Amino acid sequence: MASVSRRHVLYIPGFDPVPPRAYRERYRREAARQSDISGYVIEKGEPPEGARFGWHADAQIEGAEVSADLEVLYWADIVRDRMQGGIAATYMALVRTAWAYIGSGALWRLMRLRKGPVIAALYPVVVLLLQGLVALAIAGCAAWLIYRGAHGLMAMIGADVLADPFDAFRPFAWLGGVGLGYLFLRWCARRDHLYAWYLMKDYAFSSSLKGAFPPEQEARMRDFADRIAEVLRKDVDEVLIVGHSSGAYIAVSVLADLIRAGRVPENGPVLSLLTLGHVVPMVSFLPKAGRLRADLAFMGTGDVPWVDVTAPSDGCAFALCDPVSVSGVALEGKRWPLVISAAFTQTLSDAEQARLKWKLFELHFQYLNAFDCLPEGTEAYDYFRVTAGPLPLWDRFGARSPSKSRLEVPVNKFTDIAA
Image (cartoon, rainbow, N blue to C red; front, side, top):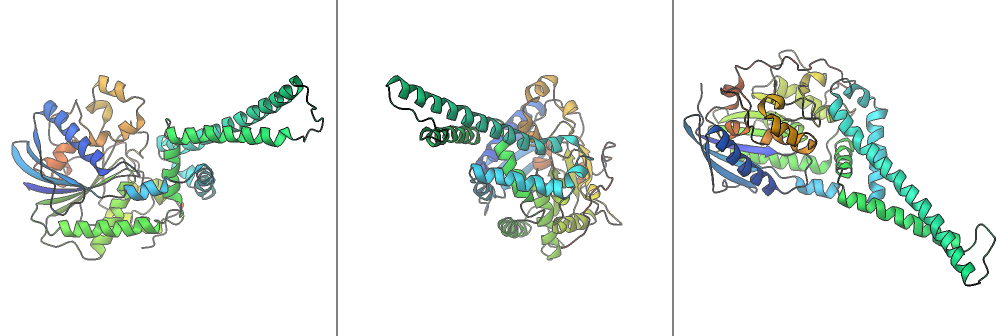
């Protein structure tokens, strides 16, 4: 069994506009919690050399000392740019996104996997439509009140009131009503307490080219590949790529590009892939996602150990769905990924589960957090043992059987592979 004394972790977030320091602070906060629970020692250090957004951790875990450099591969600026669209643009995106999934038949096939992420995808559509109806009701009521109020005021001062239904008051009344309806929608978009506007723009981004990657995303992925290639030349024992949420499929494609280009040194550090809370089918089931499907097929038969971790309690992920198999691109000799469950119902206390019950986004980030009921042994999923512990990813999980509840049946209509 191999041992790691130095590791470099490169984390690819999902569609998230928050700055990388939020991930740094989450790691430090949750590492401290897990240390108190499990008896680790994890101390922060200087950021890794060459990392634009990173931090360092010195750890004593499982009787070993490990030095870990961690960094975030940044694309939040692209996310923020895509979230800048106004109200009209968001409703147009709603129409295009709904058509991308319904018109292609992808929605019905996604529903054969897990209902949770499909409901999560339909949720912003329903909320935005309801908010639109409320805005129309506000506009209509406000216009009527303004119109009747203006007539009443004119009558009180004894002025003539036009009998024509299209009299001079009506355009101003409707203008005022529409303005109030617009202000209501603007308030909804800015506050977004229900996260509907954010989710809508997330799904719109993923489906904007019917599964093909947008040009700005492709360009940033090339930057990611360059950075990973640079890290692979460092004196470390393991380079661990972590893809979370939609960052999971980005990680798959980035690594596939890197390996095809021959940029992984034969005698370099161990290269491993960990995907967390993936939403791969939301893209791979679309008609023009041939590039992603090719990358999934390639990585499924490759030499890079790939462990996929999800949890049925996470309603935003395709829990225990093998992303290669369900996408219909499993080739002969498929080896990866190993699909396992983080089992939130077993690894979190009843009190912690109650606290997180209605916090769906925090549940989606639980993979990066501390667990207060971890079972004994090295095979239980623990983000801090994975990133700062002494075992490479596959040595930690290789003896573990895949989840018995995993889904592997191919249900994707579109299975063409185009590199």
